[in-house]
Image 1 (cartoon, rainbow, N blue to C red):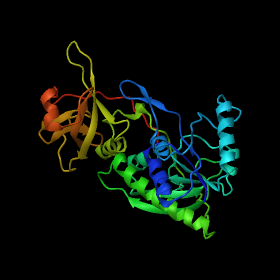
Image 2 (image 1 turned 90 degrees about the vertical axis):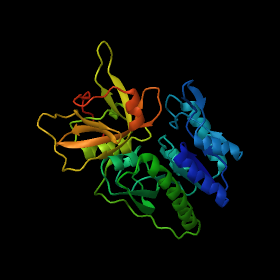
Image 3 (image 1 turned 180 degrees about the horizontal axis):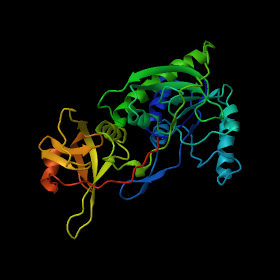
Image 4 (image 1 turned 90 degrees about the horizontal axis):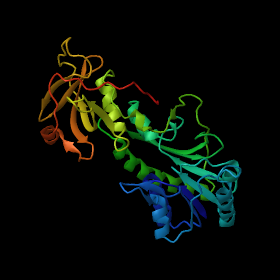
Length: 336
């Protein structure tokens, strides 16, 4: 089976590696254009491009696949390459570009997608983040046949994964990437022997995982502690949940990233004088902050701007946080 592969980040490279290891013929790889990254903002190749080049596979990096759009010339060049590849199938995993109808129908068997959710829940760009942020008990991977809609195609295989109480997006990402690679090989084996069956997605339970925005990072202390904990876990590693320390005299407020936290027991007494955002206690174990519904979130791993991620015992050595201080309340933002 000749397979074109379209993907960009590390999640996708796991599936490409699985195809290569299994001996599939990959005549072409599509991936996003190189992006500036790091302090020097130098251009960096995607994880998928790096892997493809290491295996001497031709790579195309159009900014769009719309033939009539701003990058129409790039799209037409990619279309010619896809047609010349004479592929049986295109595999798509976290590619980041919308496939127009011409791309969906060019390969003989169409296109299949490796999607990190249990469809139809969390269609869209950030399914892992949104599953954690919403408190879902499970996530998973779905292999689906692509159509013109946003993750609306018929399903071939799916597998469920429990979300642990302290699972971050970073942790689930690696597990789901490996699961997706394994399910992809199972799906292609079924398709190669014509033993596959596609099932339409249910009409109930549809949700959309909007792209993560840096503006969602600030913790809103008016929310209950369990909601804020899920935000910390969901936004690890990107964009990182944040808090703002109050401005010092003749100074400015400071933004701090929150990488570790847990909810303190509900038996903890929060006095009427302790309003949301109030620092209730500081210790070697954590910084305790009053949250909505008279709950308390203990912050255990923090990072100042330009600094390293530190356990709270180390972080407190360089920070001026006092009991009774009130952390800055942001404007409430929700992208769910």
